Image (cartoon, rainbow, N blue to C red; front, side, top):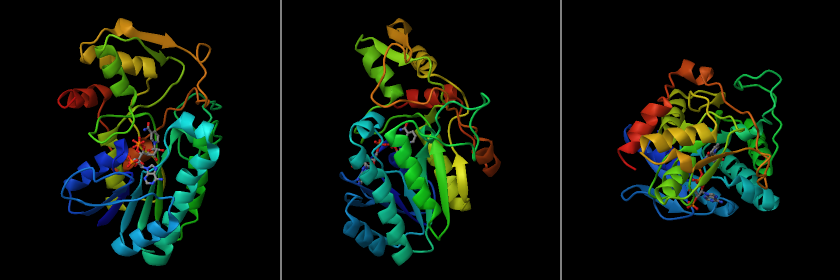
Length: 297
Ligand SMILES: NC(=O)c1ccc[n+]([C@@H]2O[C@H](COP(=O)([O-])OP(=O)(O)OC[C@H]3O[C@@H](n4cnc5c(N)ncnc54)[C@H](OP(=O)(O)O)[C@@H]3O)[C@@H](O)[C@H]2O)c1
């Protein structure tokens, strides 16, 4: 496999590279910043530069593209919809068009989100692939619009929806709930976490292994790839704090009545991963994932 990973300095992209290093794959990395690791092929570019994207695909001719780059800050997207659209929708389209012209055999894997759902399911059970989508935020709408472009790709493709990804990498430009708990509580600061946002938190390494499994199997269509346990940010934060020996009393439960961020969030968006399990996807339990992270963070 000749695998191009976009967003390779990000939480997801960095772990995809780690997962691919264990396999027989030629790795091609791209992000705006410098290479995430030394000794790998990397090109720094902005995916909103259409000519640069075409030149990149011509130079590599990948057989698989794992497109994880995105403007993933949900509130920043709400505050600047055109910029969000440019990064999340246009950049995806440029990649797809460049593949059609230069590498039409490539399998395209798009990393998407539980925020394409509104979080008000008719029946309260984890969302399954094919459930009704109705994003509440600009970010969710931009990812759903990008998914629509992916579905027009004449080659093979997979849309992978994931949720509340956590973990650590040396190259991150933003934190995640796991790091926020450790950083804030170890400084003795209070951290407010929602009790009315129900999710399936996903360890970045599990997601990366799931994406690589999909690449190897060339599994096509829509998949949920997430953690296997349902949590709120508050209940998840308590697990992190306890394992790190940090005071759980510094975690303050809040609800949407206490604080409204710029972008509305789905109240209930756990993802069913049964379809991915049938491919062989086996995420760690939250406890196991945190134990593994404890060895490095
Ligand atoms: N994190 C979550 O909880 C979560 C949940 C659901 C879905 N997702 C999806 O998962 C994917 C990865 O998210 P993440 O958490 O890894 O995000 P992240 O840590 O913010 O990383 C985003 C990466 O995308 C790159 N990037 C952004 N805009 C770019 C552009 N215009 N051109 C080139 N590179 C660009 C960044 O490059 P630089 O670092 O070099 O600037 C960075 O490497 C995204 O598609 C996101 O929508 C994430």
